[in-house]
Length: 530
Image (cartoon, rainbow, N blue to C red; front, side):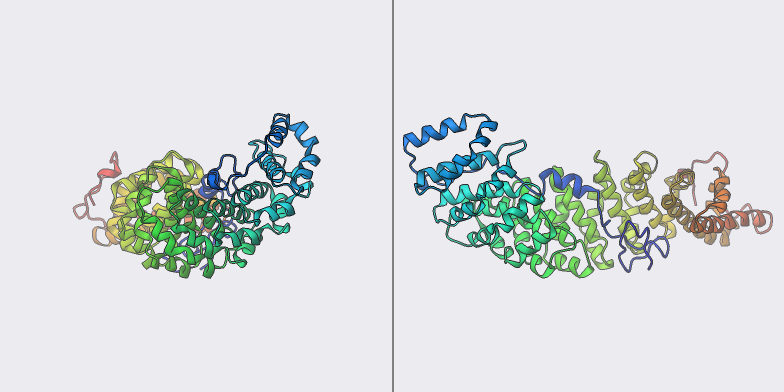
């Protein structure tokens, strides 16, 4: 099949849809939808400002004179602190442990400043090699502070993150994940890896090539919830990005994701990051989708559509939406779990991106077989919500609602009857006044499908009831579209016009008034009795 708006969408093979150019639609390549607006609320990089401290058993004794010296430094303005960075570097490179640790602590605090931390200034001091040395020194408290400082450097821009990568920190982070160091150090290393993975695809792939995924997966079993939380976020970053990562590597996390999803009372952030990971793993070929389905996560994933917090239902919706771009059986797996009702609930969420994503998911279900279309349209709330969005929503949402409803016109006669009783024809004709090409094509195709179904009724009764409904509205717009500059639009408009014109020839020829009761004048379409 050819693509629908190739510059925007990739297509999914197989599914029947409203015409030959509109198969089930894959995710937009450069999405500005919910992943950007919601995922980046938690940010692909994070800087540690407040952090759990290591066990007091690893405390370092600092003589009072050194304490006073650094306390004085800490009270200085940022400007003065930066002027005295050379002194801090000298202390960091000294042979006295207390001086080294105190200097390291001050560097970390500088890098933890909330707004505009002096990352470049610290990098220019050339301290990253020293941080690396302290990172693998074997003392948990020192290693923790060094990891924290490097994490905050990696939380910066691409150039700053690259300084950490080129400085040789990454292999040390990975090795510490499976070492016998403390959970606090492992957590900080996982956090640093997450920042690096979130920087670029090249950085992500570098981490995967170093074998970062396996030790992270093992840490899913940690009883320390903050460690699990950071590891989950980091794993989701390793699964993220295009070109996609090596699926054979990142899919290894699926058993652990299922195990965590099935746990009760985890922080919402953990469920959210698990769902984000699933959304990345399902964004691709049907084989990838099937691997995720086979992992057994679907039941819990659909349940999380009902979660009270957006940080959970947002990525759950994204993952479910990706799955229903799959083949008929993959889509049916979602339908069988009752996801349509949950997605319908999300149509009422005020957030624009959620409503758009919900319409998009439903449009891919209605691009399926007759039973799947029926599953959507048999829910009165789904139909009424979608039709309401046609006239009371932003353009992007309106377009997705159009797709969902127009795809549904490929369903049975009963489905079309249900749609028309919900006043779909009026809303579709109103939309023909738009200048948006994609909506015109979608709506015209839907109207053609409706009128074609009415021809079956006409064979028995002598009248096409849907043409009669159209005639009650301003059908001149249909004839005007025969002169549209788009070849697709004017062809569809001509096809629809031919059906409308056939009414004039059939009137008085085959029409027998007693065969079909239909009074178009002053009739509410929702009250039509076919």
